[in-house]
Length: 456
Image (cartoon, rainbow, N blue to C red; front, side):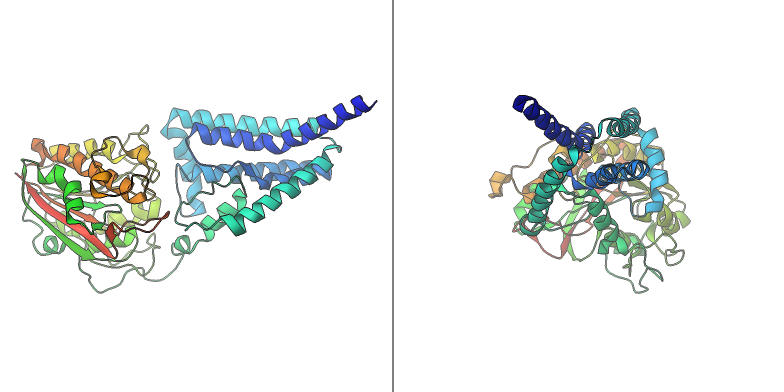
């Protein structure tokens, strides 16, 4: 009898563990397939289990679906980040048409959610309640401990909870309610009226000095304390036989990427970032000036057009054509990890095409792969030796510099072709490199570099 009772108890314990772990296993598998980050145990699944324990079967089904969707949303934002919840309908549609693999993952997820609901309704027993109560207390205790004693990291946009235990509902609420995201719901005029200094100041005064202009706002490109480090990063361009009249400078600046963009395109600073309905204030921006002079004006960026409302305010600055991940670039299999989007190395070919097919062109390129946290999965060509400058290989400083040199190498390959002959090129950092994991001793704070040259 004792053996039978022990076997029964073991089955109850294993059954309770399976009920807790099953949805987490399913979502972790999906995270693995799409190469996304996820915590191991999402405590939110105890909510529908509590309803099931109270025999509220319909409420269990509703709660389980909602919790699963919230769990999925944390993974989804690592592929297609969004600012407003209203953008989700569009983004979900794009997610399923952009790549056949995403279609397969989406269908698989729906099937597995339905299968789990059916399985729970069939196998759940009241005997599991005690096991679930014990597991709940253990997991909640660990969660509280990790939040209050282990979570000392600095947070930034798209910071993903990678603890062993956590709440995806809380992660979603933190994302939506963050002060940075809230600036996209503010009302009133979004642009200051006074002009500010930029690396493009001469373009405002002499826009038609060259038939072709390439303006690159380079994500997280900083001013190094050691000039030799910067020269190493720029060496693919500095050593190029087609480059002449190169000049390096620095520009004092504090702000986010969108502020850096407005600085260079319009010589203006934002009051807030809700630019979706901002209709005025863009009339004197560089793209409008070039458009009035008969130039084709093109904007290129590897993220989706909804990101930071670019698909709305870019045309108001004067861009006639926009190439985003979801509009025009048409490279669905290209994926970068530092920030979700297409890889700059893949985008380079699209930029070359525009220079080859336009006699008078102003092209603006906002890069993406050098975004914090400087993911080395975006590093295809490792050209920078951090050890040569006593920079630790396992730091964000090193990763940033490696990705930056890769970009300038890609740029050097682009301009080597005949399409760029006679082009004026300006590369400027959007803001100083943010370092989430540690402070930096390599870069000078509150400064961005500028680099200008002509192609023979």
